[in-house]
Length: 73
Image 1 (cartoon, rainbow, N blue to C red):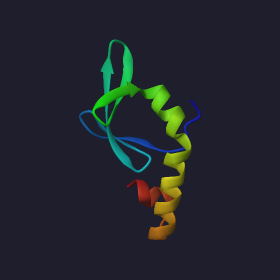
Image 2: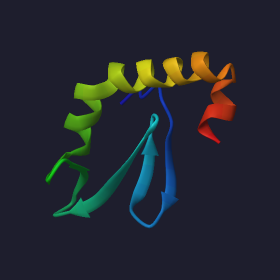
Image 3: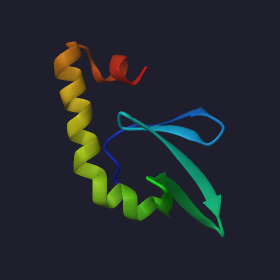
Image 4: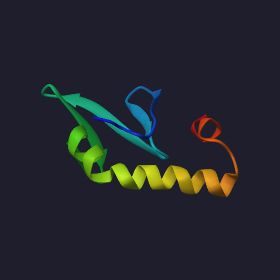
């Protein structure tokens, strides 16, 4: 999918996507992301929010003065 931001497992079904913690579940052979009160397909969510996640990481890096590696850790 040419994703340009980190997706890191935190625990169980909780993942760090960019700078947000989101729940990801497998439902009916589809990867689903919990957004608000419901679920959307992972592919749709990532495609729709790709630029947002990239921008938020850059903002966090600028504010902290740290590298991408540090921000992710």
